[in-house]
Structure formats: structure tokens, C-alpha cells
Length: 331
Image (cartoon, rainbow, N blue to C red; front, side, top):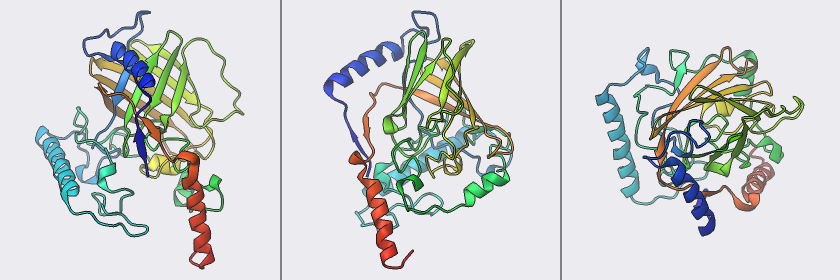
């Protein structure tokens, strides 16, 4: 079970001091050294799906009435699930089901997926391809999607199960589940991206800084950034081969290869909006690149410390459960 606990009073004080000076609504949109000011806590919750529902066909945008109706439906469902009598979930199941009727992984109380569509009212977060859907998988990508996983060792579990990477932290960042906040800090030579889930920290070098060897692979890759006008562009390579971090979206489930090249673009649109856009180049998995746009909203709330499973006991329990199944011949 996921728990959130407040940082120590001292840490929160320092964090609030840094963020409040950088992200106040009436604060400067430029740093003292002249770069666009992207700093602050940014909320990326949204009910807009990654892929465009097939029912929308070629429609890229919702009407204002359709967006309002979707948001109202989410509120009604949240109220229903919050006020109904408590139930006990069965093994392998869940009290609350998803919108498509499939079992969820928590009851609705634990989820914080937001109650609003993106401000642009797009029907999907994917903006390229123009149909708002992921491109086709390559043959190797299809094999990855269809493979089954054993539970013989901790290495068989994905990075999300092992709490190495957050379900929504990526990189790239894709809205999912809960703890959907990003803290962004800047210096003249570095930019730091800290996601609330699993407190994944990425330090992006802006100045001349040698790339690491292509033989050195990392969970969050090796990032380098530069300014393109008012937009921060981050190019990341050197990802761990076969990296999987979640099953909550197709990219996280299929994962990536060591040849993934991720291009992220962050633009401060106004005092309260940070446009986060990324493009995935991984020709071993996808038949073409694809791009996502997520307008993030400025938040006045501090980040919370994320305790995924302290002591890593959940991994031991997952493996112990599989050994118990084997003992009964259920596997």
C-alpha cells in the first residue's frame, strides 16, 4: 500500500521557501540570470487519456460542453465510491473497477487522477500521430508486449514494482494514479526535475558537460539540456535496456531499449501554466516517433515524501506469494 508522509518541518520550510519565491503567481517569469523561470511545483493530473478513444475518430478537440460533461461524470463517480459502504476486496481483485469494467489496483480512495480535462480540451495527450494514438509496434515491440513474466527473482519485476521508478515519473512523465506533481528548480548550469512519486530526481546539465560513455546505462538515462528561445529542450539517452516502469500505460508496459532517445520541451506559457511536451524515438519498439503534450498547472502545495514500500518488503512478499503458489501446484 502506498503511503504519503510529510517531510520534516525543516525540509518543508526550505522547500516552501525555494518554491514560493520561484513560483508565486505574481513572481518573475525570468530568473535573475536571464533564463525563463520554470521553477515551482507543477500539477500534471488530468482525466484526458494518453490515447484518443476510438469513438472520437479524427476529432482532436472536445467541445466545452463535452469537457464539462466528462468532468461532471468523474465528480459523480468519486462521490459514489466515497460514500458507499466499505467492502473487502477478494484476492487478485479490487473493490473499485475502472471505467472500462476491468479491476483496478486500489480502491478509489487512494487514487488522485484529477477531475479536469487538459485546458486545450484535446481528446488525447498524444498530439502526433494526428490520430491521437500510439504508432504501431515493430515486430520486436509486439514480442515485448506479448511476453509473460515470471516471478523467479526480483529482476523479473518491473521498475515500478521495485520502486526504482515512479508509475508516472518515467521519464517521460505520463499522468497516472497519484502523487502527480513535479518540482522544478534551476541554476545557471543545471535544471533539477523532482517527481513526487518515488521522488525520482533528474539533474539536467545545461553547460558544456561531457556525455557519459554509451556503455553506461541508467534508469533515468543521461540528460543534457539547452535553451531554444523560451523553451528548455532536454535530450536524454543511455537508458537501461528493457526498462519497464508501469503497466498503467502502453509505453510503460512495453518499456524501452537502450537506443531510446527522448526529447522533452518545457515552456512557461503563463504564470500558471507549464507546457510539457515529449517525443519518443525508439525505432526498435515503435514504427515511428510519437509526441505527447501535457499542460501542467502551477500548484501552491508542497511536495510530500513518497514512501513506496519501506524496507522493500513488498518485493519479498510478491516472490514469497509465487513460491506459495508453486507449492500448491497452482502455477
